[in-house]
Amino acid sequence: MSIEDFVSQPNRDHCTVLHPRCHGNTTWFHLTNSGIPKCLNRMLNSMVRHPHPTYAKIPLEEKELWFRHFAQEFTWEPHLTARVRTAFDAKAGSHYTKQMHEWKEKWLHNEVPKPFLGNPELWAGFGAYWSRDETKADSTIHSTNRNSERKGKGKATHNLGAMSKATRQLQLFHELGHQPSALHLLKDAHTNKHTKEIQDVVAREICEAVDLQAEAFLQSQPLVDGTPACTEVPVEVINNFVLQATPQSRGRIFGLPEEFRSSASSRYSVDEDLRAELAQKTTEMEEMRTQIHTLQENNRDMETRMATRVQEEVQAQIQSQMAAYFAQMSQSQPPPAP
Image (cartoon, rainbow, N blue to C red; front, side):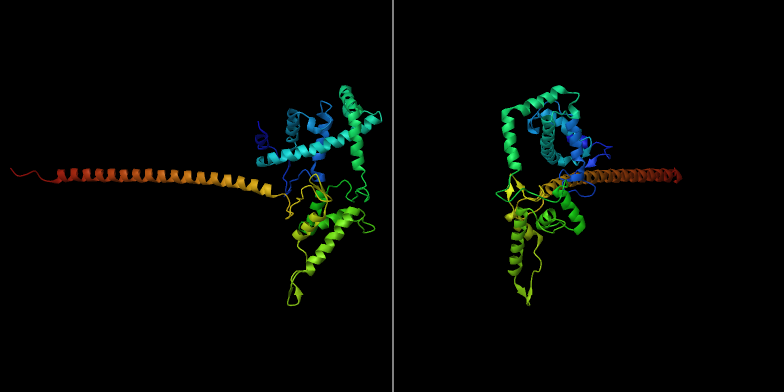
């Protein structure tokens, strides 16, 4: 059975529903309280069979088992399967890397995590990988990158704790009643709650630059009857200013949710979903049109048959009445004179 058929099965009301736009009671991979991290933790603690150094090294058939296991707890509209699979692989890969780091710390302290107490061979396999010179060299490079001072601007900091930027974005949406701008997101995530100052140097530079651009934008607007035509910078314009001023690395935008596109329009990544939904609705409408056309044809055939039958019955009745009439007339007439 395909995944599309599986998620279309009845009696799946217990499953958490996924949708990239998180409308209604749905959730998505970037939200902190989605339940997906806990699901991945359970899978990592029970479904790892070989000491693969990264998720990318896991064979496709094993990844398929992981995804099917995931589909037992989460569900989605069948046309979203490809997107769910892509997001799942990305999230599982990130989670696998973090878990590997935690397991390595245990290994360095001669500790054995609970999932490996009954599988010493698997734990020994991971230990052999971490002991390799190539692994140690890569680890040193990654550690240096994580602790980078960003060319003298210090380590990256924010005040969200374990909450994802996307989760905070959704909270702000409910608080404000509309989508927060990229500048609002940056300031909210990096402003110290006590000092009211932006501590992260990079975030502070971006916010200051965007504030100046926003002020210049308002001053450049024409006057209408002595009054500025625009008293507030549109969100789309603010977002463009932020994207132009924000450093990007490997497709990631500093300080913003992963779903925030680096395009000039700064639209959230809903176009793909809209196209998929539109295609599905179009298909459904075509099917409905076909069904309606078939019903109309059937109705016309039935009406034709009924009209023909009624006509035949009327004609038969007329003929029967005429025959009876002529028979009666022939009996009532006197015989001819001799």
